[in-house]
Length: 265
Image (tube, rainbow, N blue to C red; front, side):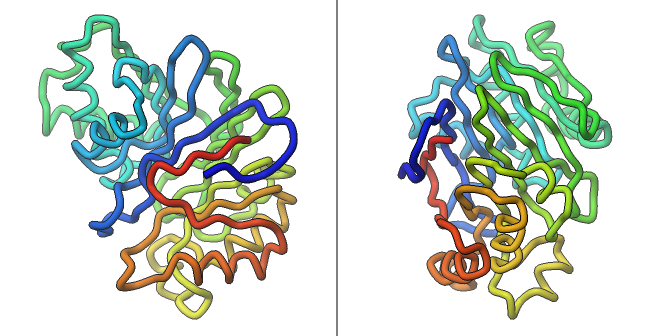
């Protein structure tokens, strides 16, 4: 799926669009192609499914050079161990993992528990980069700025910019002024959704947003396109209804993402 018009320089593929208990979809992961046949990921799904999704999207695991992690919940980081094990046998593979300080410590501790030795296997090919909110870092010709969101634990959103084109990824957050600020005039805003407005109390209790709230964030930011992700299973929500509610609040175009959907920005 490709939505939006005008000059675009970037592309994002949503490898996983489900919440942690959605058996119908893969869990949270975005892929953004870089120059020289390289790829950066944002989150890494919940387990070995990340390898299936990379295969389905025709992305070679060894092309993944950067991984930006929003937070330590298993549906966002569970695929790190399988990905690293897959990369150990590929001599040309190398990965830099970027995250806020507490998240980075948690990731390394998790690896030490469930796949001890993997850092030694990767050696210098595995690097760790501690992010600071508001301080951008670079991957090829992209600038990536992390910012804090409101999920109840340390959690980052990301503003991804290239050549004047802007993608903002706000996964797992209650409605946040920081998202509005960093998504200002974004070409594409990818935003967490939990329920319709009537489920706001439960959504907020779990650190998430309603569809209407995501729409209001997009409207406040002046984003050009809103893409909803992190869906609960179909027995709980109807993606089309969520998109309709978000569109009514936003007043602009809204897409309910599916696994492997791609968008230009």
